[in-house]
Image 1 (cartoon, rainbow, N blue to C red):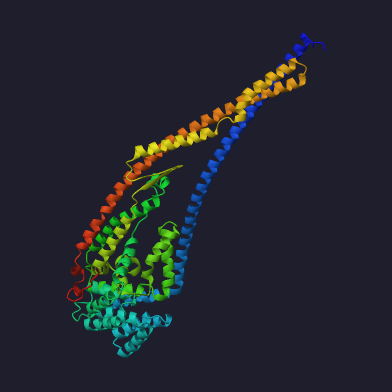
Image 2: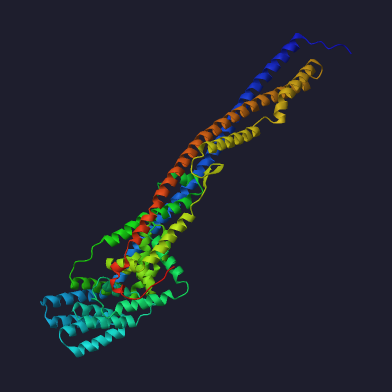
Length: 582
């Protein structure tokens, strides 16, 4: 076969073809770079979108919680208005009778109202409020003022028939107001004789009020003091009495806890899974100052200097104006909704407090629960300051035991180690002093994660092969072009150049990604280190504040210790009652 000769024209054509191929490959390479850039942008955008979606989800959750609380708050405010309207509609006519009571007494004191006017007013009330216990009592009172014993007797029997306990209480106070001490004690004795220390009428607090305020006189016959001593002795003999008192008073004390402000310790809130426990114990430590102020306020109030009649009128007003038993369901609902308002829509917190507050609305309770409610829930039990002093002093040992238990329980919940949770970093600290150690561990974690991520962002075996394989294939193609297989040679050259371009394109992309990874992890290192330092600083502050707040518990203990029961329970001082709580 004759040797094939390549003319200069053929070489020129080949060179032109190769130039065209080179230009097209250059264009293709540029296009690939543009595509790679767009892919990188899409990848980055997807990450941004995911981050934004995650942030949006958190914001949406927070928004939902805020909205739920706002809706609950709005509903509670509306419901309170509706309840009060319903109370006015159903029981508003009782208010007229209630207001008339002290009006009659004060009018009789002044002697400026005709007795017939008083009689007519009470008879009209008797007709307009059928079934209400106070109406016949007012008729009896008017008949008493007008010296009509037969009418007074009939009205009195009707009052006792409708509600023996309240009628007895009412006339015990009326007789004392009229300085008929013997009659007052007889009515008091009648009331107390109908009581069971385990199932007392919640109105018994009225007798406590009068007794604690010294309004029943010296109680020389020991009617009240003996009865209270017997109640306490019987209750103390019951199994589990001490445990019951501890829980009873502990619940009442914990009712005074206040929530920690939401802007306190923001780094611990966000960067520690231990935060719920920390928040709980801090609120428990803050309780000590609340209780000290609460007890101090009660015992620093001066004894009323009002006249005997004025004080008795106040207690009478409490008896007749406090809601009656049939009003309890609406009053309980009103209190629950008021809790929701107080806690800005937090229904869970409202339910917790209502569970503890429940006893104040119970129609019947034992004597010690009556004392607890009088001391710790005066708004619901309608106890005076004198009664609060009396109840706390009489229950001093139980209160002290319960308070020490509350302190101990709160201290038992103090975590020895506090978690630090920042992104993928999870570790612990005891007192926030191991900053160097934690920063070192965090940096090691960042380095490890960065190294693992960089290891995953390298050229594949094929992409590395493309550089040398492409060169070899291109060289083979060039040889084929010189030989007889021009078409196959051209294809081989194109394939070889394409492989080399792919190698350099992928290499550039990988290098860019690795640079981004370096930047991202360095940012993580910087931000994470700052968060760790800030969180550890708050750990130090938290431990210090907790220790300070917790130490105030001793002030409460000392305050309770200096209370002398005899000072506030003078009427019981001579009895032989000795209640052992240990």
